[in-house]
Image 1 (tube, one colour):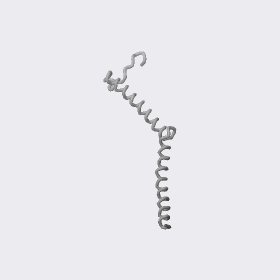
Image 2 (cartoon, one colour; image 1 turned 180 degrees about the vertical axis):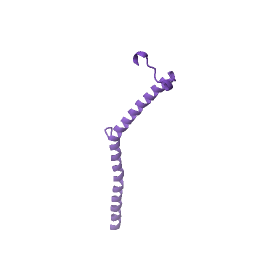
Image 3 (cartoon, rainbow, N blue to C red; image 1 turned 135 degrees about the horizontal axis):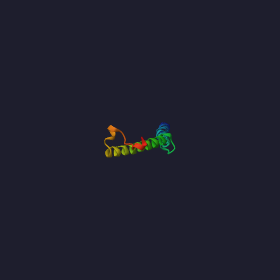
Image 4 (cartoon, helix red, strand yellow; image 1 turned 45 degrees about the horizontal axis):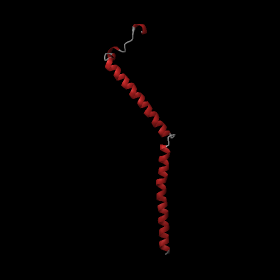
Length: 82
């Protein structure tokens, strides 16, 4: 019985070690996905900047569609604003 008990104890320890690794990984992943984590905050900021850039490019392309000569002559300014 002693060899069987020893084998079971060894297997039980190895199983505990094996199960501890995914648990540690899950704790790390939870930390990364926490809404206040630096990773999530930076990602949200980057997405906001990308949204602003997309809107600015959209506005710029709309302007160029209405005023294609602006690329050559520049933006039109009334005489009073020059």
